[in-house]
Length: 243
Image 1 (spheres, helix red, strand yellow):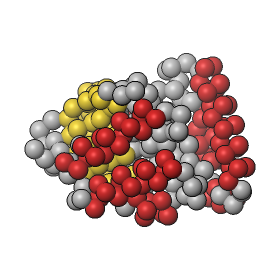
Image 2 (cartoon, rainbow, N blue to C red; image 1 turned 60 degrees about the vertical axis):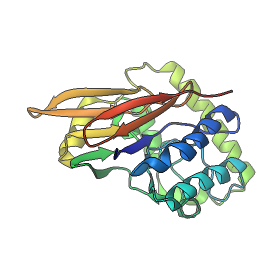
Image 3 (cartoon, helix red, strand yellow; image 1 turned 30 degrees about the vertical axis):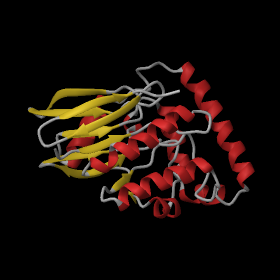
Image 4 (cartoon, rainbow, N blue to C red; image 1 turned 180 degrees about the horizontal axis):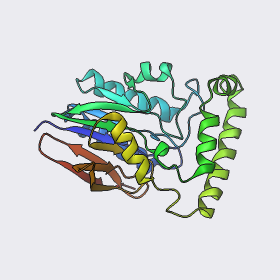
């Protein structure tokens, strides 16, 4: 049956080989059967540049490349952890980088896709940090630092982010429904797919008197999370992590 697959928030890192193994199995056994694969950000725990000579990065690139060469295109939207993935890695992986917000046609239903962090407008502190880190000149300077220095900065940011989350309410870190509706109206669609919040669910609601839908991808910390959309239905599925 025709279907398209979506994943996000795997946060791949050398410290979680179980997630890496599950991802590689998914890429080998399931992704090639899909019409397309969309990765909606935070595939990696962090990204310090396309020039990092990481075994993990090369494994991921090879898995994507095999998928795309086999006939299943791979599309990527940056997340808040890996927003500096660039054209060099994309070319090596055989994947297409998409803009922050993208409208795609899914079997006759126009659908807005994104990572989802821009929807969390109640978290003013994070949104300020997001605007700063997306500055082109700042990224240019960062990528010209030695790899070791970049790694240290990334580790520091991760630590501060973890501490900050402990001090924030779950409500603040979730999406703002008003922003969801604004984005849907701007896009002229009734369906949104995103990740980031780690709260997998399919939300049904009314938008301007018409049925609307928000599909949220889950993270891969305790189980794999895959969204499968076909011509007739959308289904959130889980996958076991081994070892």
